[in-house]
Image (cartoon, rainbow, N blue to C red; front, side, top):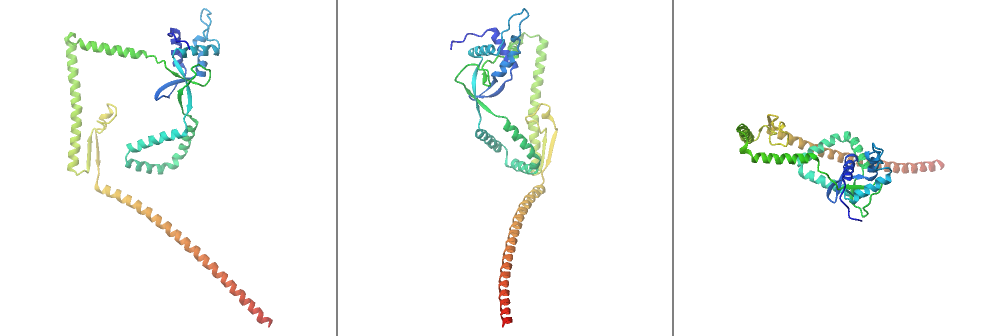
Length: 332
């Protein structure tokens, strides 16, 4: 293969057009998340692109047939816009191993209480969710997961092969954001040259921002103090949080709502919960005892039936003998 020359402006424009109009999928390639496209879809799109229609001055179009598009895309491949990859279907064993690892992580993160509550809810909703689970399983079966590996033959083929993008142009808004940061830094360095009115305004804004931060820190300390004092006075019965979402991972306005949260945890409620748990255990034990009694009764009934059958057989034998004796007397 000859060393690839620098791409022309036309080739860059076509590569940008393909990346914008041809559907791409994301996957992992050698432990890196990448985007790839299918060769046949790229060829189909380029057949309807501006480069496949004649120009205003009746100029010949760049793409006339699928073969011409394949040759051009092969040229882009040599110039390192993308490379060919090999699709490898992921086996069910690998998917199961990954799902087991994820489940183990979730179980470690969540406590035992959450597990018990989830199990109770699942038992109640098993009948309702069985149909939905079947649908999800069907959808999962229909979707085939694949992973990519490097292909040994780096050529462009019109088919269902995957081609991973190497060309990743920097968006224009990145340049705008970078330029804005540079200008802001330069403006801050020239702060002594600012007009007095602007400097005074910035001074008041900085004081306001510092005061707001001190207010947030003071509020966080105050809510903890109020909670601890009330918890100690009530011996752990009353729980009061001011701004309960202040330290949670929520939005700015959501962190200040609700204003307070109060919970009363009585000892009676804890005793009731223990009684309920004990009652559930007793009911399960009683059910087991009932099952054992029923099985014992069934065994006893079977034994009685067998004894009755044995007795009937013995009686029939005796009656048969008496009948024979009576016949002998009659004959005499």
